[in-house]
Image (cartoon, rainbow, N blue to C red):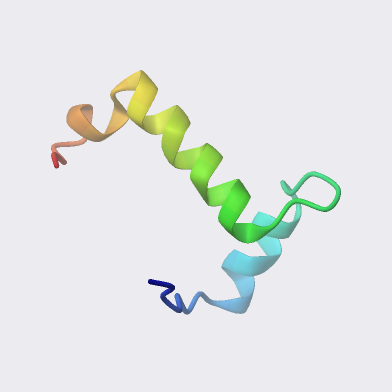
Length: 49
């Protein structure tokens, strides 16, 4: 089920600087989350599933 996520223009611009050619925001965020989950960053920050 798709959701709409509202972000500020400033954050969108920051993300745009990191997007690969033809990469969508969803693809970028999926990759970003995978990196954090693999490295255990969420657990280090006190977050858990």
